[in-house]
Image 1 (cartoon, one colour):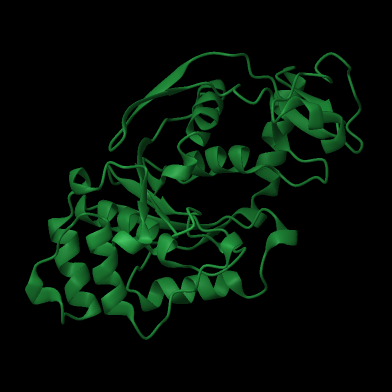
Image 2 (cartoon, rainbow, N blue to C red; image 1 turned 180 degrees about the vertical axis):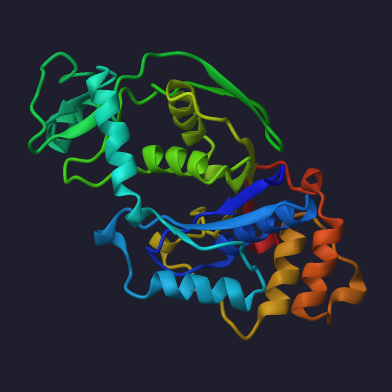
Length: 291
């Protein structure tokens, strides 16, 4: 097994956009520069939010941009049995409990779950499964952001299986990172706060803790991040080299002027050789207009 195993884990709720390219490219270059593996995981946990054809389109776009992954794609939709086994284990150990609270029930608590069902012993029918999470300060050293501290219980006991039976992102991502042997995670800074929940689960389940690197988000002029929910334009397939060059500049890699007319493969070859995670902008966000 290589010392470095990284991954890119898109959600097929839309197509890849420029913000997705930054995350994919950064994780790809970090893995390849280290001589490691770069795996691909499709986080298709939520069928109602999926866009038909998006998963196939994501794979095709990564291929067109030269970001070739190692091994088969892991689909979270095929991992339900593993998630269910852990949920059953946590419930049997009284580390999780069933909750029937609706959004209306919780509307007065401003996003913090107050533990209404903690001691209620609710049945599993039509109920979410929440993880008991006592307040505690957790910390990790992010390779770019430095020492980060937070509390996995900042929003109270969090859901690991939804009321509709679908499994929560926080549970699935932790189990799949361990299953795939992920040693290094490079992803957007919007997931930095989620890392404390992931650390809590990793320690609870005695799973390895990967190294983290959270890169800046790209913001639109109105302050919203580039994302599928804001209909950010999909990556075009006819502007691969110019967009890779732009992404490298956004990632602080400063490719030399002679690469302005370089091909896709020439750009990626240079970028793998010269990748410097320490050159990434330290800010948590960047405005697209400034790139």
